[in-house]
Structure formats: C-alpha cells, structure tokens
Length: 290
Length: 172
Image (cartoon, rainbow over all chains, first blue to last red; front, side, top):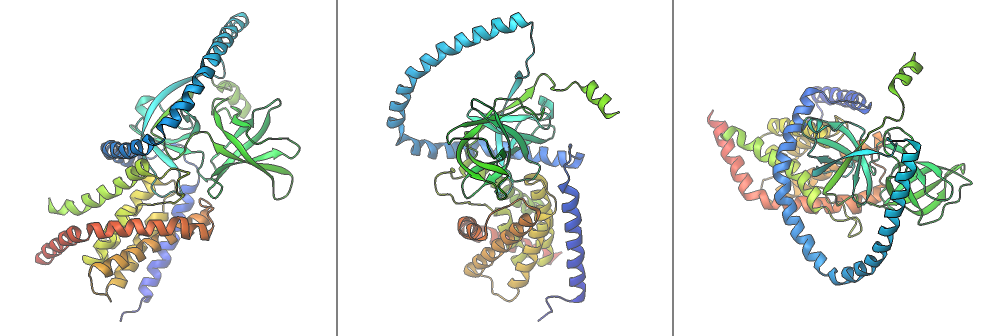
C-alpha cells in the first residue's frame, strides 16, 4: 500500500493550496472588464448554451403547462375581477400622464432622471451551483450593453449586469450574497425611509433590507423601490414587499425582510435598462478629483 | 475524431448543467430543495476510475477552471475542488473492484466530497451563509440522489466508451 502522503505529494498539496489562495485573492477584487481569453471563453460557451436552452425550455414549458392547467379556472375568475379594476386605473393613468406632460412642458424640462432606454434579452443559462446567483443573457457588447446596467423582469427589479463579452453578458441577481452586491432602496410611504439591500436569507426566502433607522416605522406589506441615488440604477423600480421587520443585533438599526416582487427562480425574458441622463456631470467629477 | 469525443461529451454535460437549472429549477415555493447537477464531475469521476489518475486530474483541472470562469465570480474554488475530488476518488478506486454498485457508490462519495469542498471554501470567502443542517438536508441529499441517477443512466454506454479508449491507449 503506497503512502497517501509521501513527501513529494505533501509538497504538491501545499503548493496548490498557496496557488488557490493567491487565485482567490486575485479574483476577489472587483474587476470592471474581462480579459480577452475570458471573453472568448464566455462567448463560445454562450453559443453552445443558446443551442441548448431552446429544446430544454420547450420541454420544461410543456410540464409547466400541465401543472398550470389545474389552476386555470380559478385564475380566470380572479383575472375577470381584476379587469374592472384595470379599466378604472387606466383612466386615472391617462389623466395623470396628461397632467404630467403639460406640467413638464411648462417647466421646459425635456430630460428626466427617470428616463431610460430599454433593451430586451433572453436568458440562456444560469449558474448551476446555487451559491452564485448569476444568469446569462444573449445580448452583449455589440448590442450596447455595459456593466452596471439595471436588469428588470416584467414583475420588478432583478439585478445588475456585472460583466459583458461581445455576444453575451452576466447578470448578478439581487439574491446573490457577494459583499459587493449592495444598493440603496427606499420604503414607499408618506415619508421616504432609506436603507440598503444586502443579500438574501435562504431560510426565510427573503431579501435582507438593512440599515433602516431605528425610529422609522415600517408596516408589513409596504412596497420597496430602488432609490436611484447611487447614480447607477434608475429610481422607482419595484424590488419587493416587506414581510417581516426585526431590530439589528446591536439595536442601532432595523432589518426588514423583503419578498421579491419578481420570481427570481423562473426568469425567461429580461429587460436591460440604460439611464439616459447621467446623474452627475462627468466634467464636474473630474474637477472634484483634481 | 476519437480523441475529441471524450472532452466533447464532458463539455456537453457541462453546458447542459446550466440549461437544466435554468429550465427545470423547482420554483421557490414548491419543495425548497436545491438540486445541483454535477454531471461533468460525475463523468470526470468515471474517467478517473476507469482510465487513470492522470487523466482524471487533468480533466478535473480543465473543467474546474471552466466552471470557475463561466459560472462563478471567483477563480480557484472549483479548480482546486474538482481536481482534488478526481484524485481522491481515483485513489479510493484502486482498492475496489469496478462494477455498477461500486461505481455508483464512488460517484456519490465523489460528489459529496466536491460539495463539501465548495461549501467550505465559499463559507470562508463569505459567498454562502447557509447553516450546516440546511446544507445537509436541503442541498446535499437531493443533489446526491440526482447525480446518482445520472451515474446509473450513463454507466453502461460511458464505461464501454472508456474501455475502448483505454484499449487504444494501450496499443500506442
């Protein structure tokens, strides 16, 4: 029986652990752009994924349809009830839109912070181990997608673009627990209450909304939206609904648990938003740095 | 043609992992199980058991690096874990006779070694905040069942293929 740890093997093991630590250290700092070989790898894998996802989606869709058939009647009843509500809301919306337009015209204001350009994309894959919550979309640099753009599904905000290669890009979902995956949000109400979204609690299946002032009064069921303050994401994107509130460990702030409004597990089509008006003038920022 | 067949097959399994999770992932509120396909790892374990240790180690390194680059943000976790898993499993397999049951057992052991490595490393870095009991029941158990089924499914065709490759290796 050979020794499991001969001298040579022990040295190889130690060296590989050192290399492992070095590699992790190197890749943990946030990189803005990918190196060329990485881009090439991602593009070629994206191509094969595109071939794969279509048949997989068709088969999955068939099973989903079977499951949905059972609830169809109930859903139909509910939707009919909703339809009346919709007609009422639509009239209101048209009215508000018209008022808004006339008011804007009076102010001579053409561009708005809330304006953004929308690009649609299809999801071609997802990170298979669920430690990392990434999805891959079939639009890349050649379609004008850049890192840090906000990504939404029809139900609400789901994440941001982290890196882009020529034909595909990676989207980090809001449920990813990476320590750099944080952004500011507000609780909608009479007074805006600010906080930051910091990761996901897998046990409660809820997003963690932290750093809320201790005296802020939040009720269950209140909606949380992006604040647009980080000059990265557009404001007013729906993130989720408060389901639980609890004081922090030290008692200086509160933590709220949010149920994400978008289903973060069943995403097929997404929209990538680009802010049209930069929040801060670039020339101003350069002066500041000097 | 025969030379690229093996890497091509493993690559197919590797890509299908991501599509499968995207298309078939159980919805949030159904069973709350995390089924993680580790199909490329299972195939690499077969290579490590039926061809030789060096091949297993090399494939483990190559596909570990691919997993790191394509599916995660951090380079090194899978590179180390997959190569180490392939090596450890092939050392085990030297003392065992290769048949369906033993191979199934070895792939289950291999996949759990990989899961523990990745869980440990990710907890160290702070990517995972799962408790150990949740990890064992909600993640490891379903994952082992899924990958065990995959191992049984590919056993006969894939081992036949590997034996053919071994014969051609001997001739050269």
